[in-house]
Length: 119
Image (cartoon, rainbow, N blue to C red; front, side):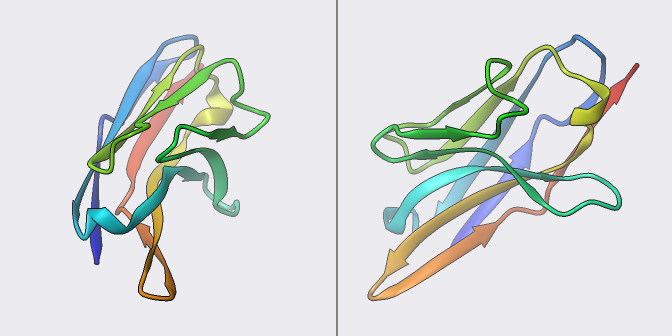
């Protein structure tokens, strides 16, 4: 099992920046990919960005060129630098990790951290 704990959410004005952190513990040796998803009220949870242990990244089109994910070569955590925040970025942000234990693909989620963007 892997446990994920997010921090860094809060209230920011539009155009501002926030940095989210996610600390991983437990069977971190099994992690392949970590990342961030978000869910706004009344909407489905959506991908924000992911990064593999080798450093390959994937971003949602809506955050490209504004958000930066880091954590390559680390199985201890993942970080998300969010710049030029917009009101539509407001959501609960969830840390995500996946990996393999034995032959089973495992998926893990944190409890979430609230990001509020005021216009």
